[in-house]
Length: 84
Image 1 (cartoon, rainbow, N blue to C red):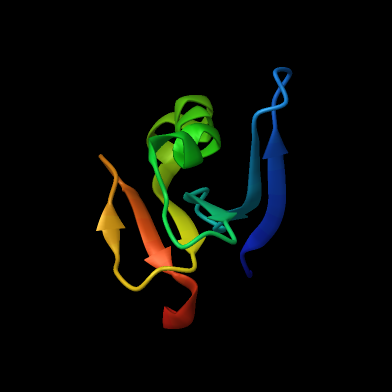
Image 2: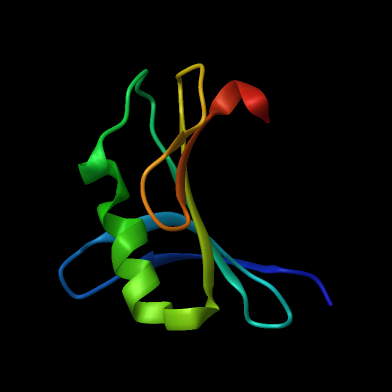
């Protein structure tokens, strides 16, 4: 079986662009930003997804137009789009 791809939006309209779920129910959230910098607010949707998924949440990634991978807390990363 392959991974399932979807998106996340809650009742407060907090969103995550892409949610990947493995056949074993592991969840990875991905946000895409067209900015050269990222901040804590860019991870709002990923944090909400982590709360919703609990232990199934394995990682949250914000893809951005920067040059360095930057940690933003437990299992949250900003990663340059150019690294794809």
